[in-house]
Length: 629
Image 1 (tube, rainbow, N blue to C red):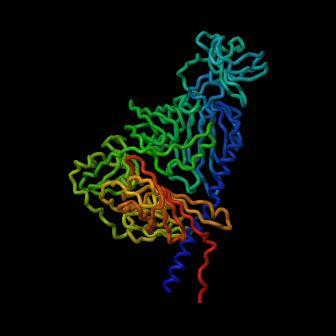
Image 2 (image 1 turned 30 degrees about the vertical axis):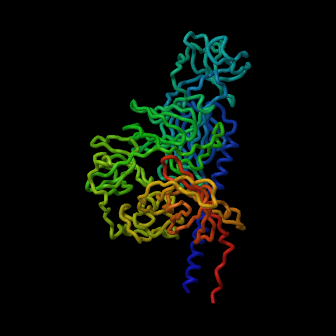
Image 3 (image 1 turned 135 degrees about the horizontal axis):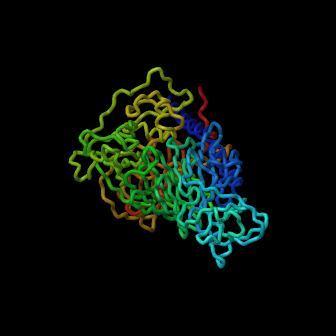
């Protein structure tokens, strides 16, 4: 009977995994179809143009603009005529995901025809042009002429115009002899022609080299709830300059000055932060007199007030976490890139010196009641280097030591860990009864359950479930997101696996003696929390989708034996013993899946060990339970 129960449990586990895979079947197909559609429809988008890439989005024209048509995929408009974009988030019910593409001039000289800054806007994004619109008359040339890169006769030739061609007259040179124009149509490059060809040249504003081109300054707001599809990227804006880091462009986003010679991903929420991630090349951020250089593989944050204006200080660069830049549609940009791996930066720790503990809040003000995590006296957090003042006190942006929660703590409650003057062992009070909403019914469509483990927070369970904290609380009729108890059963929309952090093992790094079968000594390894990317792939499944690899990244507890010949990896309640078979290679058996796991390790300088695990398991559909007797 015990054996039959274990077999039944095993099949229940496989059923859960199969159901999750089935629910996600449409997701990668939808995302890939959207990306392919944008690539096809917007491939010919010219300089200073915006293309409606994929459903669904809404665009607002500048005041006075007529004939503005931006209603369906494939529509193209002048960026100068665009006031605002409202892009809709990924919707797995309507099968929609809003995407728009823009090619901008920014501060690229006219002498570089065809060069543009690529802007890819996707997901829950609101973007508004902050460059004041200028009336630019559309003129028809009476005679042919050449288009020059500068307002002088011996300037470089960047194009040619024929009689009857149309162009927008933008400005005139200081001597009035030349007019800067933007060609009308798919070839929308800019350049200079003699003012004698344009009767109304004298009415145009004088060209200012420091003036901003359309959308070179804009306000940005992105979603905060994330996406419900693992294959869809987070909401935001991808920006790419031409020619790698050789050509730097300047942008102003939410009144923050950005210089970029690379590819970056930008997100922002009011009363929270603007996040600037450099995924290739390098950039810099300037706000309130402070400038921070941002290398590839890192991100910085700028605190934002409720009006999306910068407040406080910029954080120091920190390597982005797995998942932050996953699945970004970089293939739709102007040039191919490889997303940089995260940088390894030394963390600065602070400790809670308030004897009563502290709360990590979602926003830097006392009125905000969204509590992400409760900290006890002596608990340590990672300092991001960003601070702000809400008018009554200073707040500091921190990250939990498990790197799962980022938020704000009163600066007065934190101090250098060496000077915290607290024992550091004060326990967090354990809630004995959950707070449940009255007259509320848990979501019936969430058929899977997760049992709360000691130390779990509702926020981390929500992240593992790929839903917002509020949705998970409401789906389980939870009145207080800070009051869940170990053993409590929660309904969840997908299989949840959370690695429970183990206390660090106090042992120094040791020189490793290679095993007899290995000729090269392995790197120094130590027990602790390792960042592990796991890939599960079922073999020989009739359904090709079922054979597609499922990838997840999280921290797992790893115990290393004395000579590093054996690693014990604990995740999801199961411990897998991995034995060393070669340089940086360990092999083990995942009992719950009857699969073989191969682990590869890397040891970045001064960082926690990183590892990748590949698990090959038989297809669930090919395993059958014994017949009942």
